[in-house]
Image (cartoon, rainbow, N blue to C red; front, side, top):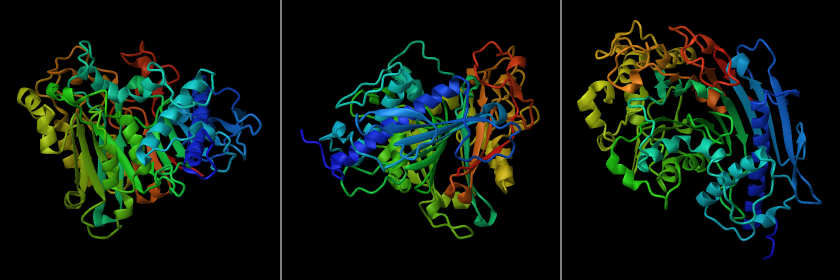
Length: 536
């Protein structure tokens, strides 16, 4: 087989594959540095601004170079001008609650590895899927100290880094595959989100609050600067979403939360709606589907607006990690102007065998907000998902309009006037005093789950609760991310890490009922102020 010429479809794909592998190598080693404590740190060449930073955090940079003689990739310390990929990790988790990863790739390098992708001519979406899996392969190989660029087909270990990527999909794969001991907590929330149109339409704010186990609070804010193209054609343009910033975790190549700011002018985020209808699991099949985490990455990379994002994402629906996605297109938003009628806000909801999409711009301008809280908004999705049976059994707690968060958002959203008040709402939990946080069937009735940012750890262990989500758990809202039109254009946002402590005591491992749970690398006391994340 003849190696493709530089600039040919195969050559272009080879360069993209080389960059994907190189950035995965850097990312894998930096994850290792993060977990090992970052000893011998070097100054950071990149920039990151914070409101509060009492101690300079440790940073380290590494580059991947291409050896012109051997055609092999090698890792070097620091930032090298001829690097195929470069990354810097700043570990400030004990100062701010976050670590920060900046990763860039370059198209200016010798394309000596193009032969590895010879003859590979794929459609745009399938190419992006391959690049995503190749990045994961490089992460896995580098971590194990065995780097060899794949030739042709390659495999990824099912119990390695892949498990970190499919955590969301796995929650639905377990019941779909009839796992009898699937650990699903009835009623458990997984994130709150709010899209808020400010008075006079002067700005549009987007906010997300991740709900997760407190053992998951090792967090990294990541910046990826790719040089990928839309497809393998010689004249294919750069992918619209090559540059992105997102909240994430060690060892993952996507957000998981999910919250992204994209170079395409989009901000994408989701809250999980799940599936409680066993009859739908038959649509979860091993063929002709792509797991959600991959479709998420590909849609973010290729989309230019809400319609194209939805069209890409809904292809090959796996029926796993079933979410309500919000796609905000800042390109369509005109500060101070009237409703454009469409394109500003697109909503997508997925179930096994079903994806429903609608433009909700007019509703956003009419109500001035869109809130998301783990319950489907589309009636067809709600009815199909099995929630009607839970409403019949437990009442409005499971209904779209009557759930505690639905009522709190409806009551408090008008208080949002700027970024600071948006953070206050997204961190809100006054369950001891707020009547909307009461659980009438619980004893005691005030419940830390019934808030915008849950604190289930504050529920008494000896209480009486109608379903498991309302019990004492090491689970709750573990962050907040907020951006605006101006901030998003500069890939900036405000962020706070850790459980809320605005109206309740801060979470402290040593003083909590969960001090015996593994939480290696985490601060003991989670009491961090919001920071502004920015990049040079």
